Image (cartoon, rainbow, N blue to C red; front, side, top):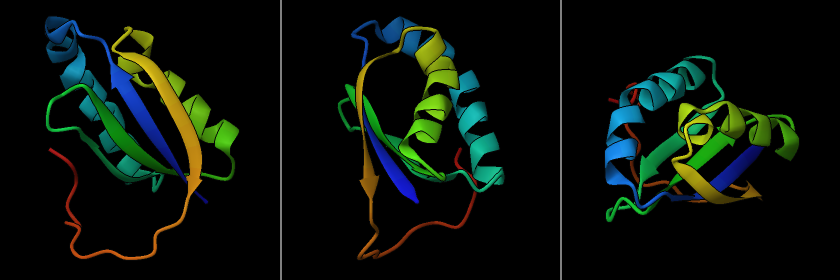
Length: 97
């Protein structure tokens, strides 16, 4: 099942920038394991959307809480919701950068 996480970031942009490389490595591992559908920050860098491929919402919660952004306090609030893909125009099949 797919679970969407809508996440709010801290306003501390320096912290976000410092932790971002480790966070992206973590997401790349999830991607390689088939546990990440899509991810990316909002254009204003106030938060992000991450869609996990998991067996339950609680599994998505665990992946989110293990994320370096969560462990280091970049994620300050989030909601998790089962999500269904209906339309897709274009997604790159390559690993995130």
